[in-house]
Length: 245
Image 1 (cartoon, rainbow, N blue to C red):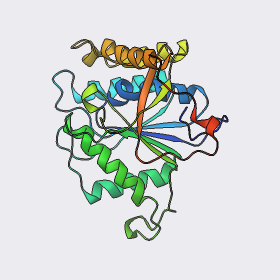
Image 2: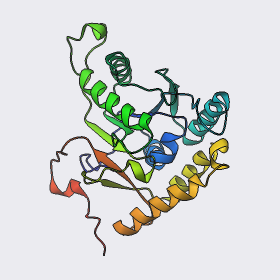
Image 3: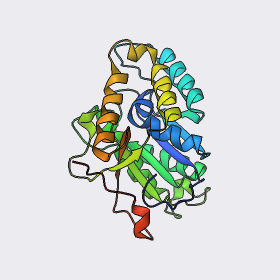
Image 4: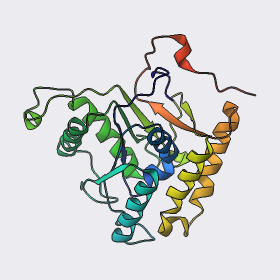
């Protein structure tokens, strides 16, 4: 649980963005599952159909995403932007996602990191979501004047692959060691059959989680990267340090 939250679980919606049909499951799926199991409403938004993937058709990939969402027991929407491998940052995309943020009214958003040396859609979507979260706060934006402004509490980024991990941001480690979380996460990743039969993505993600967990003195962990400095009310909310060696 992020250190800005109190011991009482935040039941306001969690909104999670992915550029491709498997990004969320591979990059932060266990966090999504842990929040959903705790009773928090979770809404996933996928911004392409994986059209340029080497394996799997767009219809197959959408079907796999829907199956994974059912396994994780979360809501799922697809938002059309520019298509897989064609995403560009633009004001129109930013306003489109800001409208979605105002509609769902999340307290927390997760999005792909803005690190450049990864799939370009990941970095660009992270930038669009970051800007959309800011525009969603502005009550005078004429394109959104029909919706009440909404300010989120936290924006966190997640890395789909090691290449996407920021080197200049101290991560927050989320404990995902609960057996039900781990088994459900593995099942959700396995739902992306076209991808996991082409490369051993599940082993990659489990190895990453095991390594982070070892460093933190727990079995499994996932990392998120805050967009801005965190504010806490009490030192006890900060959890424990990850250094174990």
